[in-house]
Length: 364
Ligand SMILES: C[S@@+](CC[C@H](N)C(=O)[O-])C[C@H]1O[C@@H](n2cnc3c(N)ncnc32)[C@H](O)[C@@H]1O
Ligand code: SF4
Image 1 (spheres, rainbow, N blue to C red):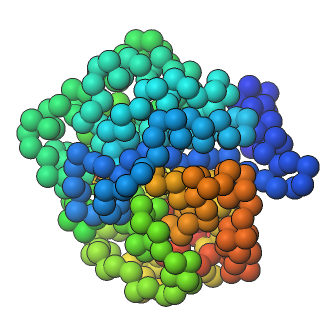
Image 2 (tube, protein in one colour; image 1 turned 30 degrees about the vertical axis):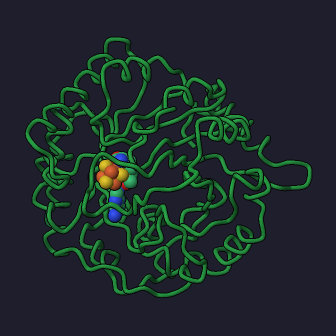
């Protein structure tokens, strides 16, 4: 733990949250809740893991407010989708969050109009705004020149207003690295740092199983099957570009932006050998021995807009229309998943999940 963190109110709140999330029966609740507010989207990114099939009877504003009211003290919510800003009750939901709750938003940024920026920057709970941009011009997302201009003008307004009011809110850029945009990593890093003034920037590799964070529910058995996954990358090229990124960081060019890979195959701020990426990327099968045991379901759950609750791999552990969050989180299905993780560390369905932690990176 960082020296000094212990005395901050942030640390105090998180400690209270952890203690209050374990009741007298020993039932525990996670700390992070990912609200998939809608599966509707104004874009159709070819690599997107969301199915976006229209859902009948999807959760309404009142349902989300009720779910938020069930969260333990000091919880953190991620508001995402589909495109979360397409959810009509977005502002009302945020306005109804308790003061002890913090949140972040993951958006494609096109609907981030000035009044919404003003509104968001006014919220004490907002900690991070993540905007997904996959290359300069967002060609990966089929952007026209007008869409690009709109996005950049939205983000510039956000940046200027945030700096003006001097608020400690992180502007995070998320880039999906797919087979087609590897040459764009360096231009994107430079753009993010110099033009957008981002605080953090994550280069995310494609998920390795269709079951990760999807909006359609699979049978749990699928998590235990070896799926061959996808083969997307020219690996030497990826390694070369990541080496260039590390050099760029070292040179000081990227100023205040902190860069990450997701999964964190290597830490860009250590002397770790970048070539190790080859051991993890696009492997035919997931090898649990390579990774630290995952504790994600103890910490974080997803709530889909059809009421289905899932840990990270999308199999339903219950539905908010039928049960309370506490009942769902402590259900037999969730306990089975936790037991399997305790036994195996990670499962075949975890292949190339962004939260994987290679032992080589974490045990240095
Ligand atoms: C599903 S989107 C929802 C939020 C919003 N529509 C956006 O694009 O930021 C959440 C994040 O997942 C990323 N993403 C989509 N498909 C992915 C995939 N196959 N592998 C890894 N990340 C992916 C997006 O780029 C985005 O950063
Ligand atoms: S990545 Fe985001 S913007 Fe793109 S289709 Fe998926 S949900 Fe929509």
